[in-house]
Image (tube, rainbow over all chains, first blue to last red; front, top):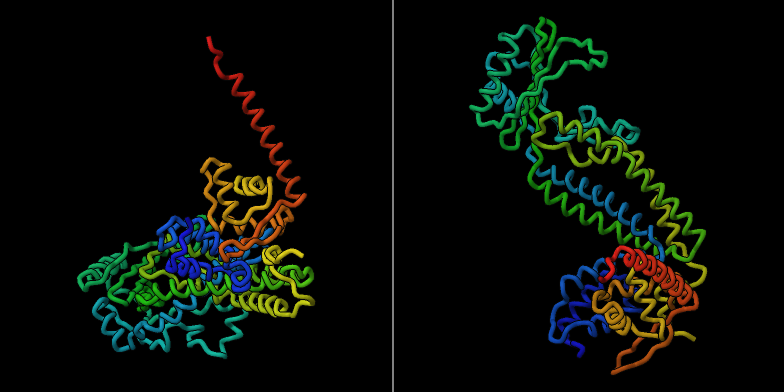
Length: 368
Length: 106
């Protein structure tokens, strides 16, 4: 016996919102009747399996082209990359909740406590948390940002280098620094020792660089100690940076979901809109294909290298998400991809020559 | 052809059915093994319609609710026949092998 309980129907109707509006208008009652007939008597809620099934198939229905097996792949690729872009943009916004970097006086106080036997030189203030060529992002920096210099955009640091004969042996500098940092409540990662220069042929510069990374609260201290100790060489570099604020994580989640959802809806709209219009469909498909390549290319080129880099060096705070997406280093590709996608969307908005309904809807139209 | 598709086409082989009728018939045909959910059914019907294997047949009003009936098209009938023949050939081949390996009763 069918269950015609209002709460169940209301909940089914809510789930059917995942289907496009035109489809709901045409087939919604039919789906509801089938759902109601299939429901056990007395049920007031859809089962989890039913809910997942309706959401999944509703989202699929939004893509149109019911006979296509590839449209889902393209939609997923678009939604994932825009989920990542959305998450990256949201993390950048969330970084604004971070405290400014310490001013030179505060930085000197911190560094003097850790390195009392060294002469800390001039410390320049950081004008912003993220800089490109030492300056905050501005319209003047747009050419650099777009034309493959976007990799210069990165977290700012407050620090300095110390030049001359070190008062103590470099190994002793590392050991004392570690101890003082621990005593001062810093969390210190294991030191990383590497050659100062790459030596692919095996004949290396004997100079070693020892890197120490420590974190206390939202402050990260990076120390580099060189084994080369001559009068004219810098033997100690110190830099204070900010750790990612806590707001970055929820912001990334929210931005990611929002970006993916909007991308899915827009992709589905364009897909349905170009259905049955061969010339427009082919052109829009090519433009979207080009956009996807341009969006994904920097991601695929960047992630392996950055993963290797993260594995080999201590990172109390990972590189910002946009760097993992190859941005803004690949911002030109991103912008051209967006232009191609927008052109595709503009073509999709062109009026149809004659009204053409969704294939599924056509089938639903009462015969002659 | 996947099993649910095969079962939907089979459910429509002896005449037009509405959505819930197809669900019931698929359950019967599969001896309750396949329980088609509504979302899956209509996605499959849309696809089969787009492929020209299924078409809308007629509407009926029962208890004030409009029921939409679907039927197999000639192309759907051909596709179902071809798939049935393929499955029959595979089943026959498997049975033959199984008979050869089965020990004979003493």
